[in-house]
Image (cartoon, rainbow, N blue to C red; front, side, top):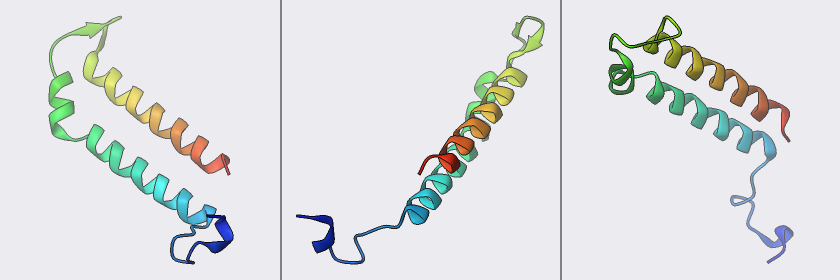
Length: 75
């Protein structure tokens, strides 16, 4: 079925899809930075002298920034 024959409610504008993806990213990182996962990294282990919990939070934050930037740039 060609795209022009789809009902209007099924067609989504790129801005709507982008907004939905950004909302999903926000929810995903809300889960990643919530207690159960933070608790999994909250121990005395260190990697290169840096606590693992700090590295996890930094990596999650960097992934959030990179993914958000990519989603905003991609059409």
